[in-house]
Length: 288
Length: 330
Image 1: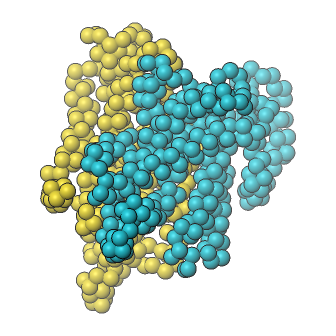
Image 2: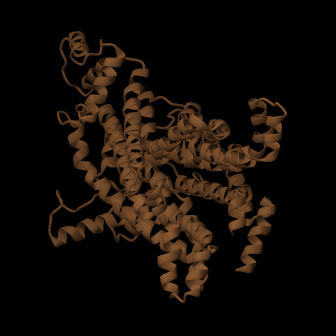
C-alpha cells in the first residue's frame, strides 16, 4: 500500500513519468503514425469502393483483406484513423472552449447568471447525446468530418463547464483575485489574466475526456450509417460489415481492425485522462 | 423532503422533455425543402402511385397547418408530442410511430434497467472492496482489468462479446430476443429470454462495472478518513457492519448522483448494443428506420429515448432525499 501511494504521488508530480500517461501517449502516437506513415506504403485511394476484388481474406496482396464493397481494408484503416482523430480533437477542442467560457462566467459572476448556466448544464447532462445527434444528422444527412465535429461539440461542453465552474468558485475567493478587484481591475481582465491561466491544466485534462466523448458520439452516428459519406471512417466500416452480415459470413477481417483500433484509441485516451486527473485535480491527489 | 426541491426536479423534467420536442420541431424546419413534398417523394420512390402530387402538397399544407405562423405550429407540435401523437411511420405504414415504439420500448427498458442495476450494484461492491484495507489481496488485482473495461464503449464490447461467445464457439444465439416467432410466457420461454438477453446484457454490465467500481473506489477512499469510522471501530462493531452500514452507505451517495448523469450515455450505448445483437428494442427499430429514411420514426425514437431517461432521472432525484437525510432537511 505504501509503495502504491509513493508511486502515485511521485507519478503525479511528473505527469510524463506516470506509466499510464506514457502507455496512453504511446498508443496515441502509434495511431497518429499509422495515418502519417501508412500512405507511403499503401495507396489510400484503394479505400474507395470497387477498387479491388471483393471478399478477399488477408494475404500478402491484401494485408487486411478486402470487403464486399471492393475496398482494400488496410487502406480504409490508414485513411479512416486520422479522420476519427481529427473529428474527435476538433469537437473536443470546441466543446472545451465553450465549456470553459461558460464555466468561467458562471463561477465568477454567480447569482442568476450562475443559476441559469448551471441549470442548462445539468439539464443537458441528462439528455442522451445520441437522441439529439440522431435527429440533427438524419435531417442534415450529407455531413462531412468538420460539420459532424461542430454538431458533436455542441453536446460535449457540459463536463468542462462543470469542472471549470467549480474551480472558478474557489479561485474567486483567493486573495490575489480579491486584490485585483480592489485595485480596480475590470471583470474581463481579472477573468482573462488572473483566473484563466489557472484553468489551463484543468481545461487540458477535460479536453482529453471531451475528445474521447466526441469520438464515442461520432462512432455512434457512423455505425448507424449517419457519419460522413465522402471519406472512409472506422465506424462506417463497422456499419457496412454489419449490414453485409460479415459476422455470420465469417469475414472476421472486415470488422476486427476497426474495432481493435477504436478500442486502442479509447484505451489510450482513458489512460491519459486518468493520469491527467491525478495531476490536474489536487483534491484527488491529496485523498489518495 | 421540501416541496421546492420536488417542484424544481419536476420543472427540470419538463425542461428536458421540452428541449427534446423543440429540437425535433426546429431541426427539420432548418433543413431545406418542403416536408410534405419530401414524404411524397419518398412514397413515389418506393414505387407507390401518387396522382396530382401538387394538389396533395397544397392540401396537406392546409391540413397540417404548415402555412400557419411558426409559433402556432410550434405550440400544436408540442401539444401533439405530449399526447404522444408522433405521426405515422412510413416504413411500417399505416401504423403510428407511437404504436411501433411502444412495442419495442419494453425490450429496451428491460435490458437497460436490469443490466444497469447489476452493473451498478456489482461495480459499487467491487469498488468499495478495492478501497477497503481489510479486503483480500486478490481483489486489488482486479483494478487494472476493470480500468481497461471501463474505457471500452458498450458497442465495441458488444461486438467483441458477440464474436468471442456466440459466433466463434457457438454457445449463444447470434441475436434476437427469443426463439420462434413470439416470446412465450412459460418457464421455458423465460429461460429462452434469458439465454438471448444474456450477451447484450453482459456487454452492458462489463462496460459499466469498471466505471462504477472506479467511482466507488474514489468515494470510499474519501469516506475512509472520516472520524465516524474510527468511532465505529472503537465501539467494537464488526468489520462487516462498518463496511456495509457505515463506509459503503455513505460512499454510495455520490454514486447515485452519477447514476442520474450516466443514464443518458448508458441509454445511447444500449441502443447501439441492440443494433449489434438485433435485439428488438428501440435501437433495432431505429436502425430499420434509418435504413428506410423513416424520419418520423427516427424523431419518435429520439423523443422516447429522452423521455425514458428523463423519467428515470426524475425518479432517482426523488428517491435521493430518502437516502441522504442532509438533503431532506434543506
